[in-house]
Amino acid sequence: MRYEGMIYRPPSEAYSYLLQVTVGCSHNKCTFCSMYKEKQFHLRKMEEIFEDIELARKYYRHIEKIFLCDGDALCLSTDKLMAILEKIAETFPECKRVGVYASAKDVLRKTDEELGRLRDAGIKIMYLGAESGSDKVLKAVNKGVTAEELIDAVRKIEANGIMASVTFISGLGGKELKEEHAIETGKMISAMEPTYASLLTLMLEPGAPMREDVLEGRFDLLTPEEVMEEALLLMENINVTKKCVFRSNHASNYLALAGDLPRDKDMMLAQIKKAMEDTGMLRGEWLRRL
Image 1 (cartoon, rainbow, N blue to C red):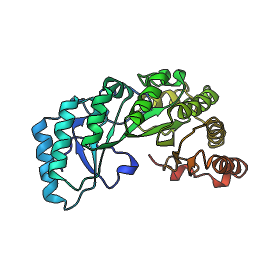
Image 2: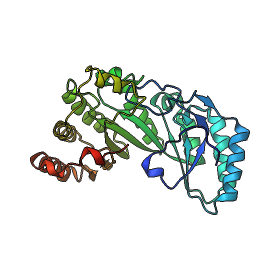
Image 3: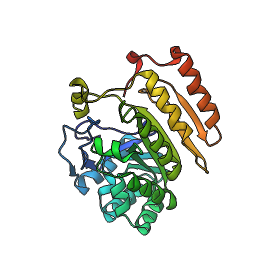
Image 4: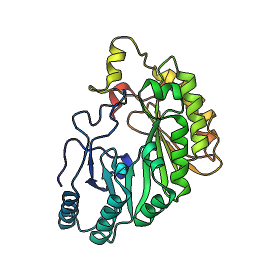
């Protein structure tokens, strides 16, 4: 398939056909992120997108899931997205689900009617990188969005029958904002009640502006033990009333957690506490990956 630059997708889209409809990220200013730094954001031409769909049909006999790349596919107009989705449905009638990265601002710009049209045309899941429930942390990492906007966006997605998968980053507040980051993130998950919530742990690759802050002593990374303290506080502050699939089993995490909230909250709290007592349970640095 034809791709421009490095391609990224959520872990759950590992077996999906990746269709690039935009290139890069229109924001691309988050200090913890090294993705898309080599790309200048732009929209792909519709004829190129359609050609790729037809090319994929020649290569693949059966495709059930498609993910629209890059980081800002939802910024396309609803008419353009509908044209792409209609082409997908025509070319891959067996496709059961289309997924897309979504920024809070892009979601909030769409009307309920537009989101309903996109849902009916095949978009069943939207992935948001919320990162933190704390406005202080969001501002510090130049996320470009407020906690209230993130909560409103996820509620809007879920209210329109689309699953929201929201990612948060442990350690993003550093030592200074550790407690606030944990408490406010737990409260945000409670307010959002997304279908999926996942917790990664901060890792800084070359190209991420925050990496320089660490090297020059302006940002203090958490130790593995402090990450566990933060995780405990975060989990204690999650109080959802409907099922939320919670995962903290990414390769970046020190401790793998998996359960359904609220049912498995006590079980996951017990796992965290056990790891705090027995640090041998924690993944070594050499095993961590993004």
